[in-house]
Length: 387
Image (cartoon, rainbow, N blue to C red; front, side, top):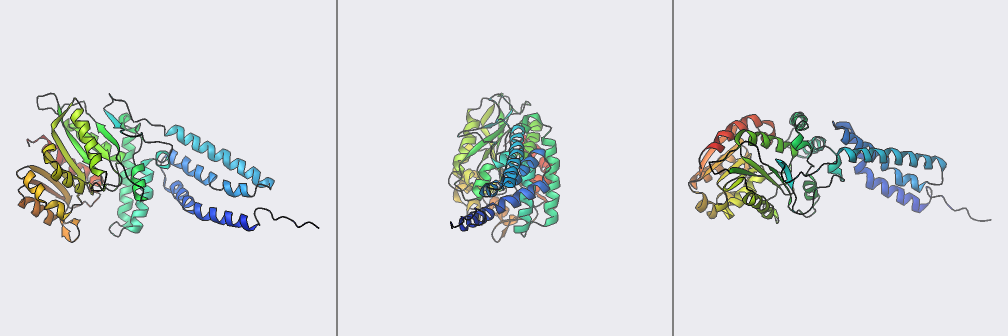
């Protein structure tokens, strides 16, 4: 009598494949379930549905001999594929044209919307990240994370009404690659040239070159900087580099791309470039200011994460004595290990830098998002001052 061959689902190999796939796909299952639960945008929900439907497909193919499994696999494929197709149609954005006021300048390749961070709305990406940050960061409470989610929902709701920004793709792909340990390269540069002129009579305007922090080059931040640009006439140029570790290899190259854009743009005065850093971007801004002081007119640091070595460097002292800088921070925020922001300011003042400082008692390291109206009130008149 012939020995009966084991079916796939009961064979040793089948069990190994099934168990391996289940373990490998578990993080994606959890992410899909979490995304579906917290998402506020249709595209995010569609992508979550697509994941939930498509992840079980390999297991159904393993059990293909059963008619019920064939029917289930086909249904999952149709529903998941349809959800993914609709999601792709709704998120097909463009970096913009050369003459658009707001656009992305892509030096290597354009950001693809056919990737998870292209399918999922940034506001929902932030919601998921806020839960993770609250669970892993002792400095971020659950209540504060909930407040930030509400702030971001309102911010992205306003952004969705802006036709110049809502059509641009997300740039958070480079941030996630950096978080996963994949080599980081310079990403696209966000640029906004307002219609209102902030020129000094030459027909050209100043430009604010902004280095983002650990959250990445958020679309929501573009909306805030665009408000400032519209009220002051200053151009906004924001390069992209991973999770904001600008002192790493490739960080200065990303800044150089942004500076080169300013130098070659006919509406920007290359002698009036203001270098700004948010959070970790403060380290990159200080490093760049010390390395190429002649390229920058002023410094602007928001809730900066700085390093004592960068603050007290001789090159910074020699080049920036008597020149202007503004720092806006939470009162008593730590800027480098064992030191408070007050110590950093003391060092900078001792170097002869003409500092303007503002402390926001209600803020924290996310003050750029939560206290924007107060920050804007401080920055606007400072930008209009003579260097």
